[in-house]
Amino acid sequence: MCKNRFPLVLLFFLVIFNSFDASGQKKSKNKINIENTAQLRTTPKLVVGIVVDQMRYDYITRFWGQFGDGGFKRLVNDGFNCKNNHFNYAPTYTGPGHASVYTGTTPASHGIIANDWYDKELDKSVYCAADDSYNSVGTTSDAGKMSPHRMLVTTVTDQLRLHTQLRGKTIAIALKDRGAVLPGGHLANGAYWFQGKNEGKWITSSFYMDELPQWVMDFNVSNVAESYKKQWSTIKDINTYLESGSDNNSYEGLFEGESAPVFPHDLPSLWDTNGEFDMIKATPFGNSITADFAIAALAGENLGSDTITDFLAVSFSSTDYVGHKFGVNSKEIEDTYIRLDEDLARLFKALDNKVGEHDYTVFLTADHAAIHVPAYLRDLKIPAGYVNGDNLKTRFNEYLKYKFGTTDIVKNISNNQMFLDHDIIKNLDLKLKEVQEDIAMELLNYEDFDRVYTAHQMWENDYTQGIPYILQNGYNQKRSGDILMVLKPGTISYSMTGSTHGSPQIYDTHVPLLFYGKGIKKGSTTARTEISDVAPTISALLGIAFPSGDIGMPISKVLE
Image (cartoon, rainbow, N blue to C red):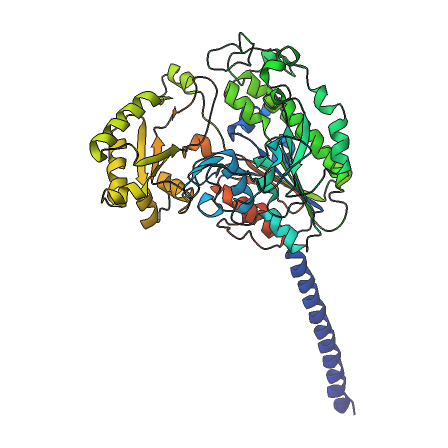
């Protein structure tokens, strides 16, 4: 009897066990599916993209001891630091830089080959953001006649707008029009830039709206801009500024009316001769008013107020103006970054309060870096120098007359590119490739040039590293020139004071890239990253489509 019942009992327990096992597996699969869904994307309420104009990577390390805990240190200590981040194209200018950060590609695809460039079809110079099809909003001047129409592909901000059926909002802000228009993309709800001169207010274009929102009008009639018409003294004891050179030296430029480039700089007394409100741009106060306006935009536009991700693009432009005037080793640039650190801390605190400390994501990078003042380097016996433009032009024109019988064969020289007149070349019964090569070989004989490439080389080769790789990424087949010239390292075509940029050399390409906030790991890497990786990294974080011209790769180490 007992022997007959045992198999039945065993069968009962097997059935029950299998039922629990099946139930357990089903629950486990559901759990995995939920986790996989959660891993598809991160949903911050707000993404904040910060571009610091003309910021070298080593500013983070040089000025580290001067920074507080709430700005750069917060990003580095609690975020992810890409220490070996580079622009992968030239020329390294503001317009191409902002376009590349937000499109995930280079001028070869997005078409913004410089700030201004010679348009071969129109036979004239054009500005990267100018558009006479639209009107200024907020000013009677032409300063608002802008749009992103010359940018040929979408931005990460465009893709977020498309992904959210236009419900996610994009606002872009910068002192410079191109620093707002290009990051905002084609679908921005608003892009605002600062009109200086005798106005001192934020303006926009009819591309975005017919009139300024009330919060912008309220900001413009407040006393904020006027409050920065004051003396610029160092925010800390100047004797503690050991990370920069002497205050009075021959490597720095002057404000009109000054006899020496030293602190304090008295804005009220220099106001009229230095463009009035335009003068603010060349001081750290330009960054401060940008932070003020960005904080006002948080409330005015209700950014990050719901579960649909918004985007705030902010460019701090004064760092570029100060670098150009005083150079990267000046007391002025050190004070500017100490003050920018405080402005960043103010912005992050406002984001904590308005959006929520764990509900937003930030990236910070630059649109290009900059060279030390060559005169300073030369005095230290480091190879550096300046192009003698007059001598070069005279010698080259003599060559053109001797070789081709006319100088008209060259239509334009700009942005270290030479544009040839193809019609004249045909009329002379010459082959374009051979003319390009002849001119390139001639220029290689000139002391100031390190390398010269032809458009034909850009067409027929696929470069993967070094200077030619960088030039090719900056070469747009429809918009770029016939000859690409690279100056010797340390050599620039600029004034004897102040710093500049634009070259494919590492001092112009090495910029910071910091990520912070929701969905971001803590850590750092010394692996090479490129500026075209920024947009796909944010796109992957948000689970949205990559920009239409994207060539970059998501930086997987950054993402949780």
